[in-house]
Length: 156
Image 1 (tube, rainbow, N blue to C red):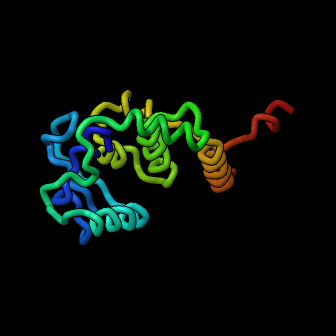
Image 2 (image 1 turned 90 degrees about the vertical axis):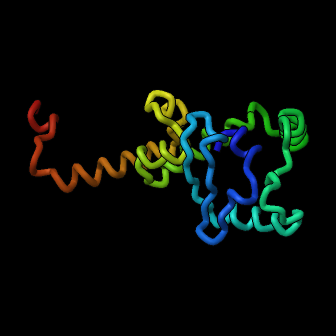
């Protein structure tokens, strides 16, 4: 989710029973409503926050009205994390969704991207992803080994 979408999220948008967060069109950059799935880890954290909250469905989940820049920078400084911004979490989530094998089209809908060019800026190819692609290519080539000639065989 985008920072603004997180800040505006109300408890009524969190649907524990279906493991979803609904983002109304009024809270999105593209003015299109969308739904984001809740992982089990996120559910656990949101349930803790819900239990500590006033349990008012109209209240914002995090109570943030402005920004977290200073607090986030302080947290990074205290923990020794360098060169990391709050927005980097969005890049990481997008990259991990693709690495999990989810189709680009589905991840684009979840992240709220309408343009492939913008979406592709969020993908960071990790060593793990590059290796998975190489393994899949090896598997494909092994399955289709009779269909193609190997260059070294043709040259020699």
